[in-house]
Length: 258
Length: 359
Ligand SMILES: Nc1ncnc2c1ncn2[C@@H]1O[C@H](COP(=O)(O)OP(=O)(O)O)[C@@H](O)[C@H]1O
Ligand SMILES: [Mg+2]
Image (cartoon, rainbow over all chains, first blue to last red; front, side, top):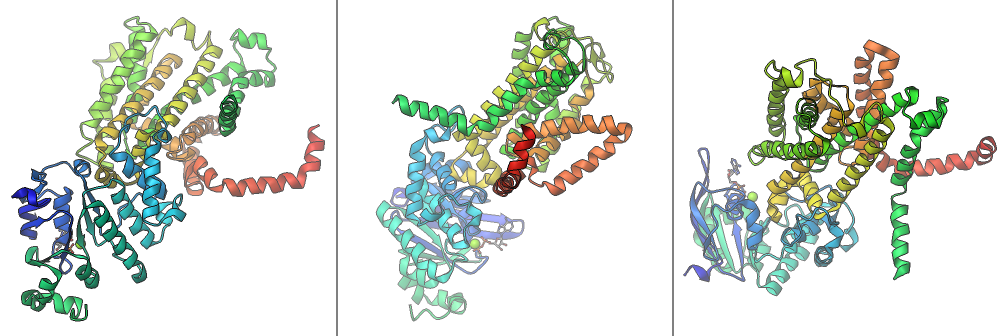
């Protein structure tokens, strides 16, 4: 039963002192789908991602990946299992070049990390792969630019590239388009779509742009005050009375158009 | 085939021009100093006393400090680990050398082995807290550990071996590296040591492991989430750094007539920090230049101002940090293009005159 789903959480709970940021969340994610999490600010979406990726360890509950309990896995192991994570607040190496940012991501899962008597250039495959990824996210012109010199949109692309470089099976993307200029959003969303389709990957997406969420997601989970309020397809969520009346309408505007 | 090999050889020389020129200058330097002081080469080669010998000693001390500063740059400048206990690595190397030579009559080779092992052990002790603490807390814990050693080495109980607060005196250095009778040889030995450590460090920083160390300095969380177990990389940097600093300590233990407890104290760690700050953090070259600046500055200021020199040293540091925030090498790299342009202009303007004068 567990193996039908690539990622499962059981009664996941995260308390920060008195605050319950994630409250008894049980969720199942099917492989090869885009599964979005929506909800107002403070609903616990980022905290939930932190529990999945191992950045936080839960107060209670468990996380299974391909049937394996990964709740207590050390953070650096998550990447080796095939889970990649991007952050709401851009998390890159600002003082390194675009190429080095992505090359490091390629090197992480390869061999030779502890050969300190060899030049890194000896491990050509990492640089070649990095250049492929840079092309994929459309940063060729900025290959040798420092990451911090990129405009915000470029940095978001770079972070997505860092995730892609490791070729993960599951991508946890926390508001990947946050702060991007509106005209750049469709490009990145299309890229996420392509990557998901071409690589049979599973994408979990936190996104505030309702048009994007509604058009891209196979499944949508609505969170509210740490709890799951509803779950279903885009159509089901859009027509869900409870979601509508609870807050969707007021927060994201009228959905009838999309 | 042959051709490309030769080309790459030529290229290697060209890309290391600065380094090669520096080394050639340092090889020639004792002879130049002798010339300036009107001392004959035969008296120089015979290690006869004189000004030339004194300046050789000064430069040997710079070599020792340069290795020590390099080791701190790897830890702090490259990997981003701020330690306030670095002097302990150096001090253990120096005191072990002094004690094993004087009280136990060991020869140099086994001492080097023991000191290397001691370096690893000290790195492991520091690393116990690595997974739990970060940033300033790591600095304070290392300060605490080093302070314990600083107190123990000066204690009455240790006085028989370490000479308490006066320091360890009367160490008989090995004959072939005697700092008095074989000073010129010691000089070239020191030069080779700096060169070897520097090349090894350059290689390390350029390796996959070194690149991960830089990534850890830049954003450790991101490095962890890429899949690097950052603890192991920090441990590798710590071990290499500790062994290097301890080996610099061995050189000090042989060269210095008195091994003073001051070299195990926090002041000497701060000295390492100042050297790489002045030279340029995380640049390796900066550690070398910083060590030379540090030593020459304190030597000259003491010569000119005597007792007041401490205050002036402090002022100079403040000015250096204010006006060269990236250190000498860091600022140099930033300004290289502007400076290059400036020089071209300058040389262009004075070409005729300059040439006439020098011929
Ligand atoms: N590290 C933390 N310590 C304390 N409170 C936190 C922490 N992280 C998040 N929270 C709180 O948990 C709640 C959920 O936050 P978050 O998961 O960031 O929500 P979302 O991503 O849905 O906007 C918020 O009330 C937030 O203030
Ligand atoms: Mg969030």
